[in-house]
Image (cartoon, rainbow, N blue to C red; front, side):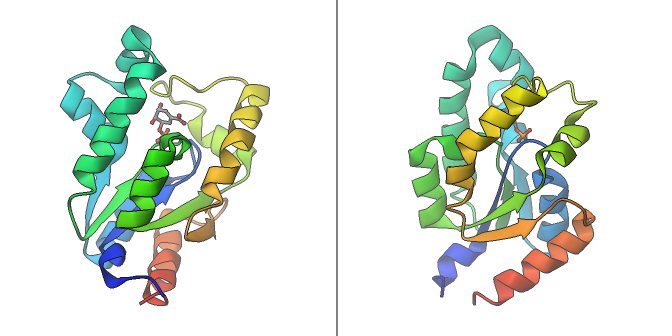
Length: 172
Ligand code: S3P
């Protein structure tokens, strides 16, 4: 059983290309919640794109901006949050997500996620397959700590969102 208040924030987590934004938008509609995409919040606050932040200042500057944006969106309720693929790498973020909401890991095969990112130009950490495989395996332990896991490899976002909504209803 999850405390009622935590069900008012749903954090979608998972690797780049897992579908956090597309599923998150559908899930928000399904739950009648708002939707916030963490990367878009960071860009709006910083007045720069994620790619510009990485290029000009590096990941060392990006991560604190991300942690700050997480705390700002996490102050809202009745909200689905699409996190970034690396948000859970900081334990402070993992702790914040765990205390304030329910985390749902969108798990998909690496090749599916890479295929979805293929035409992406705004993901500065996107690299060749061996590097992505290493990054994913570094991150798997933190994704595995999520409250819920869904197989996000093949179903369309609407179906996944409906599935997650019924899993969440089961936690009430
Ligand atoms: C990152 C993933 C990106 C974005 C940034 C860093 C990562 O978000 O936050 O480029 O570390 O995996 P998506 O997972 O939405 O692509």
